[in-house]
Image 1 (tube, one colour):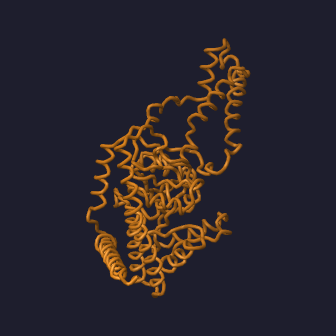
Image 2: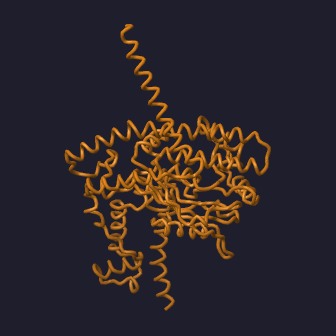
Image 3: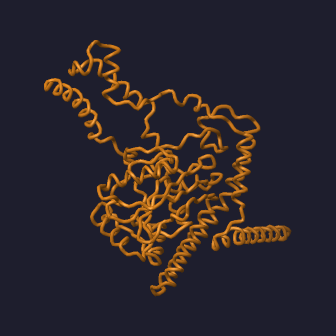
Length: 445
């Protein structure tokens, strides 16, 4: 037993030296640069290395060979039914406005197209990749993997789980701890410019550390259009980390529901240092109360811009879905922001119906990196002849164009709810109007 003591002492010493070296490297290369907002270019070099590896060991996704089987032409219901009648019946729609049995083929075909290639529900699952990124979670649609690729994948697992994951957990713990401690201390300071200055920089420093915990490589465009006090920043929503991505480059007041547990501790600490807008669970459904709180905030030009994600749920970063009109009704200047992630290095989309928050964060921290681009668009205001819905759609279209995303009118709430009967009734009314309308026009003539 006594003979093992020197060996045990050696192990303890080596472990102590390793931890000292690790935390020194964290402090010098990550935490200190995050405080001052500088970068040594290590993450970009890491990204370029990954790109070279992916280029050499690429496995082409076979799904791409079959994409585009269903070609949808943007034609109207009336035009398609006219075409069906011309090809299968002697009765033209303009001459015979009555119901024809052949008309049902239009609705059958549309139903089959929707089943085969639904443009809505596929926005709630991970984006398809054109090539494998050496993550086992994305290889279920790929075919053959060679021995060389298998060995490379094994090395990747060791690097991601044995080196990157512990490093990222340490950084995340550091960032969250500093955020809670820093905002709590700042909260006890008297209100004034010094408190406001300190609060901004504590938030910014901690968010930058958290960004590094994800090895996030972010490119910001048009920074001159960054949101200003008294405004509302709206962005497309892919992941909970959208907040960190934006808050590591600017100052925002957050809006959200009060939570318990660790999230509740963070919220209570943050609100002491900065006027964030938190709602109790019972208040969230009160639209008038929410609108009142937001209006009071934006009317005070000394307060930070509010950060809102009007989709209300996470979409897989291939499209932008319907914006809720609430944040566009209060008359404030809107600062649109487009966020586009590169799924080649790691999928940032949070499928909340499939993964819990802990599982999702584990997937993020075991990805290669989080790479994204952020575009700050020129500020927009509501026009005189424009209602809140039209204004929301105009902002949404601008974000979709800039981010290269598909602009959809569907509600993201379909992620958990069935299609409303009103959508079905609209198609029925359109067909009925086409038949009855033609009949009335013919009667008048």
